[in-house]
Length: 564
Image (cartoon, rainbow, N blue to C red; front, side, top):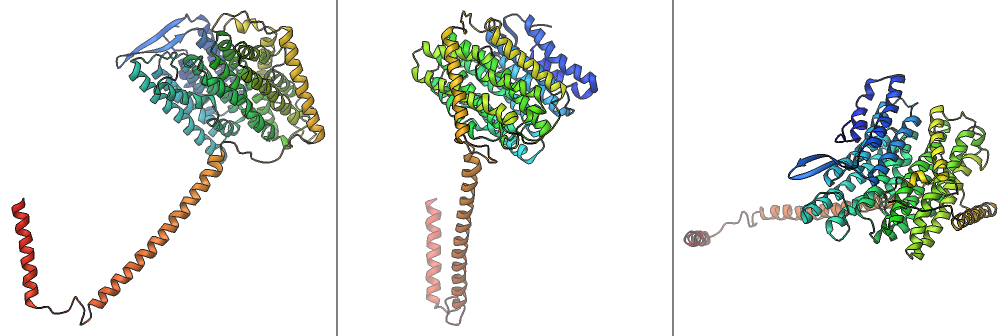
């Protein structure tokens, strides 16, 4: 296959044939598409390919380098895992939407210009919302609509910023941009929506838990990591991102601890992990950029594994509420084991993937003298162990016996989880394979005595703190409730404002109506009075007064005529 052929089209065009196939033929075809695309990437040479002339500008449909290849590899691995995980699903719409969504995300990663990036950027929004609406519930419909509006708005910021950047520089190349211009700042806002920056983040917690059990796994892999890729490509070394990422890593911890819906807990943990990546991009050194993209690679895998385990629980029990689960290790032992692997990976246990990637970002922060950032990231590391490393497996599988007896997850789900778990352990045991494909050559060694001892101490004391809080009853219990985040603005503030405006308009209408009614009555009464025998309308007038009025009108006419 020619290098000029965009790899994204293998999935996008391939998805068009899915409705025509049935049974095992469709299953094999779905598996072959990401495998074929991955094989194409392995053989792809570095450089710019698929160049198209448009309005005097050169669009680059395939820009292949180490950064784009790394995200292309992991996106295709995630696509294959999601296909395996969803083989039992018969919903054609979900299968087509998943492939198109993955293909558009991959197309955006290899885009060499801002126009191509924008087109794929918006297509990811349109295709991914179908995975939310596929739940076919009222809440999913509303959440999907809000998600679509936010994602399309992100694209509008990207487009507006890109056009301003083009006007200022004469170039549409997608490369380092920075925030020194208005165009760069607007593009950063658009990318920040995808990355779930603080106050721009709640679409993630709002929409992802409303998707189908398989749809959430697909969603977890692409949208936010596409945002991280765009940051690493266009804004490396932007100091503002250090503080944005630091805040992102810290604030979700408090919401995740009190959240009852375990898929929403994972959505908050995604915010937390994205914060580490944003910090790495903001630091901008070779070690930091390597750490950011390596952690994105690892996060796609262990977050998919955790969402897979919760999706299996939802499929078998009908709920992922921590208050309603417990004791599932008896019925779903394999799912329990895979969930623990994902929890260990996100918590950065030694010999698991999170340890060998997150430590690169921590080291880059320490090397840069960013003590405050390093301390906050250390706190965030302990926090993620609490809410994702312990809370997810504990309340789903161990906390108490909720009396739920169900079947183990379907075999295809277990197979997908097994592959994801093997990758999480493989990267942790042999990080050199991942380090070899990072954007910059590195000799970083994660398994130093200092790193291992420090991380084990952090994990042991975090576990001890969790145990003490549970034993003393201080740890927030799992309650049937809805916790408000920045969604307060549309769940509470917006409806309250609408009601207030409605009452104000009604009051104005009532007051205005009363005023008009009163004036109308007075006019009618006055008119009726003037129609009486001595009234002004029927009163007889002398001829002289009429002559005077005729003269005044003629004089006015003459003045207007000659003045014109």
